[in-house]
Length: 156
Image 1: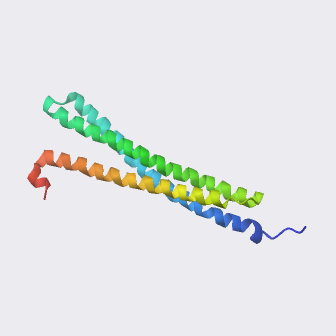
Image 2 (image 1 turned 60 degrees about the vertical axis):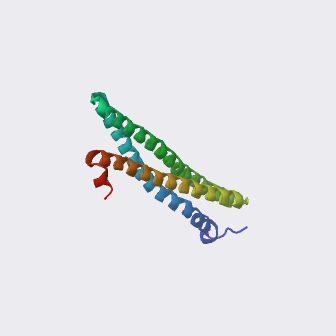
Image 3 (image 1 turned 30 degrees about the vertical axis):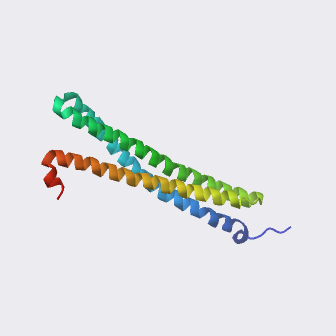
């Protein structure tokens, strides 16, 4: 049995596997941004904890509120990063499934489609919670501004 040229056998398989690989690349960049944001949250929390230990009684309540907000934000970012990382993991599995499907000549199209849909759903969940963290952080900044300059100036 004569073998088919590479353009008719392996090349289409590689072309199919490119989409999840591109998705992984974009998700990697998003993960770096999220990791940096998480690092800033952790650093700010440690800074607030240090200030809390030395604070006067009237400042302690405000610092405690800020630390609780930071902890809440860290939990939000953890979920967001988990979803984006899960999306990357599932995309990696998709590459393997595409190759197995092609090499073993097994129809895994439903599994591949389900995996792709799951990967995108995880990505969307991660992005939604990332946006949620942005909203929570802006509210925390507003609290700081109101405390520093007063309510009337912060509203402008």
